[in-house]
Structure formats: structure tokens, C-alpha cells
Length: 175
Image (tube, rainbow, N blue to C red; front, top):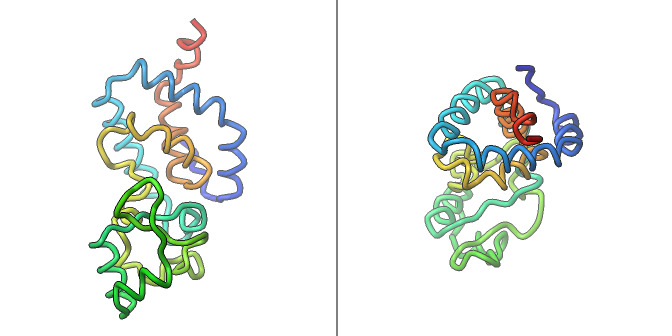
């Protein structure tokens, strides 16, 4: 599998393949066992992640804002050597659809400098876990995966690898 690393190329290719990606999602949601799907996605994620250094990209930090719970706010504020109240007041707003959660007020992340997080060792769980390809239940998160194909080179390449793995999926969809 050829790995695409450049974000401009990833965005262009993902946009071009958007309909195909949604069709593939419908296929694997209907045809592939959840445990088998997770096993394949996890293996592809290991393979692709070993070849892409997230700290040299940082594109997710320009397109997505993480959610912060109280624990995340405390840890992040400690890394900045400010109070949680000051951190929350200066940088966060309530997350509309997640009561008790907060997010940055705008894009890109205010702590992104030269494609790297200036508070990396204190990141919220959302940042640490992104792009979530090592978690169980890929099928349940697959809508986000399709949307994140344009955001993250790892997601794009894993999704392409998944389509390669089920190389006859288009024939089965046409039947």
C-alpha cells in the first residue's frame, strides 16, 4: 500500500473519493463482522501510524477542536501553569451538544505552533486518542472516519487500506 502523507494531496484525494467512501461505509456496515472489522482496522492503523509522524502534521489541530472534561482542563491548565478558571475563561466555551464538556473557542487550536502542540504532555484525552483507530467498534465511529479522511493522513490511508483489503466490495455492492 502506497502511503499518502502530504495533507494537500490527502484532502484532494479524499474529496474526490467522498461518494466512494460513503458507499464503502454502507458496504462494511452491512457485510463485515464488527470484530473482524476492528481487527483489520487495528492492524492497518499500526502499519500506517508507524509511517506517519503526527507531530510533523498537526492538521487535525486546525480542523477539529477537542472536548475537555474537568480532568482534562485541570491537566491542561497545570501544563500552562495557570488556574483552571483562567484557562477556561480565556480559551474555552461550553460544548453545545455535550453537557459539562468544553471546547476551544475557534480554530486552529491556540496552542498549535509550527504544527506541534505547545502543551503536548498535558493534552486532553480527545487529542491523545485521535484518530481513534485503535479503539473497538470502528463501525460505530465510521461516520467520523469518513469525514476525517480529509483531515488526517492516517485515517485516509487506513480507510484506503481497508478498501484494498475488501477489493471486491464494489462488485458486491453492484449486485
